[in-house]
Image (tube, rainbow, N blue to C red; front, side, top):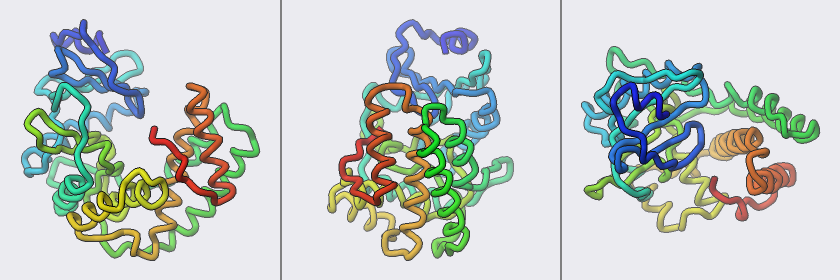
Length: 284
């Protein structure tokens, strides 16, 4: 990250790690700039598209994070680094109501010339993630692979009443940031895709219904603002099970990172095997 910042004349002496997920995210320059460092050079096309998407959303009037006007992305070794205007000097998130409003605006967009969005394919990397997770024992691996095949067959039979269009891909309040001025903006634009709109409504519903991470009032605010309760759709369970499996598969790649990750994975796969309660799952 420091090498990439140096190329652009950005000071990184005061870099602060915000989080590590699909990318490592840092504050720079007294928290006025955010740097995102990808895990792989393979993600260069994604980063290029993410910057173009940021400019498109700004022009379309959809509040979202803004890429710095510099020559980027920057490639350093096997990593791709992008730089963004910081929306605040602290981590503060939007509400479910604001998420519903932002998604409604996003879902109404048409993709302009010059922007190409990938198709949303929830199963594309699932099997590869499960097979490559070195910390998985073979019993758990086979269970997850079998579950993947079962859900794929059920997913292929779904009909999506909301139709297809622009989707965020990872829509939750965790990707709605509160700015310096108090407004809410979408972040993590690397997952924008063309797919079923129901996908973007899933996480908020699951956080409420399965995990208890949202209250009844918070979920009702989301439904009222967006205008649709995805839990009333007969395909909800299959799509939610698919999203949940993806979450567990991602965690399976990170169980060696810490005792807490290992314990959380054991808890989650037990719940999948037994169809037990998810109320003790913790956000990661």
